[in-house]
Length: 190
Length: 89
Image (cartoon, rainbow over all chains, first blue to last red; front, top):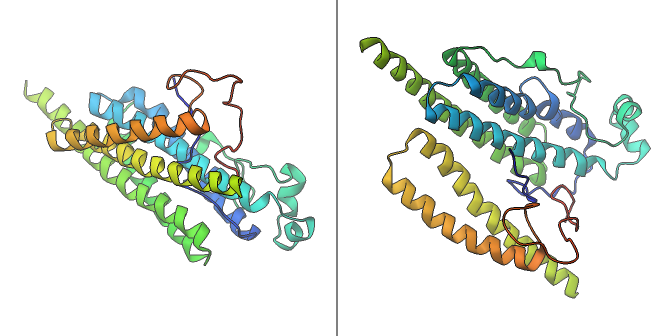
């Protein structure tokens, strides 16, 4: 099971009302290479993992991704919660507003809603781990592009933290891939 | 004025918890792949001890961080108290 902790993994306090940025941030919330995709992908792939280390790693990184989902949701929520109708219209968020109001929804900046088609889970740990290496890199570059789009320190700080986590997860998945290869190689020589 | 000071204390204590638990999360992932690294396990236990003490102190003053498992329930049930993590401070 999972336990919820009443705290964010990284503090978020955004005073900015940059609604266009809120909409862009949704790329990492409900977009193809966003945190929801990553979390759900790792948590459903873990059943194929052959070693204790990889079972633990997919569980633990998948769980951390859910904490990142919460960070993104908080960022979007804080920017949008006090927005006026005029500000919403000026930012081109009228279509989002008519569907969700100021609520936080699993969608991307183009209005494509999250779908399980974004993620992959095969009964092969090499395939899954290789896919995860790409997922982490896709998320890293998305964070860099998001950082390019804003000068707000309140927004840049959590994005920088999240970008760093992509790099660490990429490293851990790379080690896991080697672990799985060693595991299969050992078995062959027995 | 008193409320502001209390908020500042809460935020400062929470920030320290966030920093300590981040170290534990990161070490957790490292140890998954390096279970025989004695030095890293020593670090983990050292940070865990610090985290546990700070967390207990925080929960004593500001209410539980989890709905069950860490602290006995107070009366009235204060898990429902604001602020929640997504709310602006």
